[in-house]
Amino acid sequence: MQVNPYLLFSGNCAEALQFYEDILGGKIVSLITHRETPMAGHVSPEWQDKVIHARMTIGDTILMASDAPPEYYHTPGGFSVSLLVDSAEEAERVFAALSDGGEVRMPISETFWAVRFGMCTDKFGIPWMVNFQKPMP
Image (tube, rainbow, N blue to C red; front, side, top):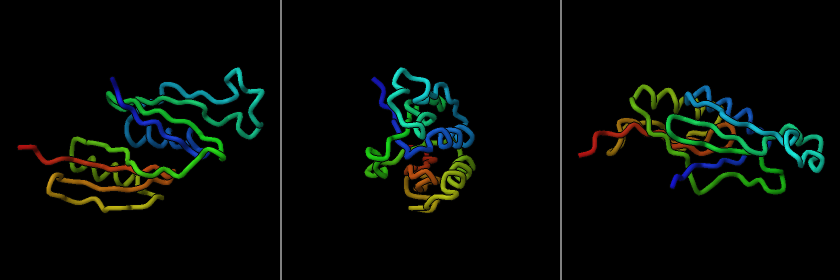
């Protein structure tokens, strides 16, 4: 069994995934718009190029996403996408990029469990935690 995040966006999914691909070194392996489906005739013209389903790989992890129609979209809450990175420098870089244009909820700093830990919401409204852990005893 795998648990993978599935993120919903308010019409800017393709832009968000390109942003994550650039920052996180991921790869968009699938991105399907409404126009490309058998249901295209049932979707308004302004939603034809919105994403109905996308899949991105980041290391061994799969991130999935789509655009939610306005009547079904809700601001994300009650969760964060957690990134475990391999160095303090990588934590600083990723956190700076994700928080740019968004909101810092907890500045990146040392904690009792991490060399670097920070929380932010990116410019697309997705909450993130960036963590470079201290060695576990």
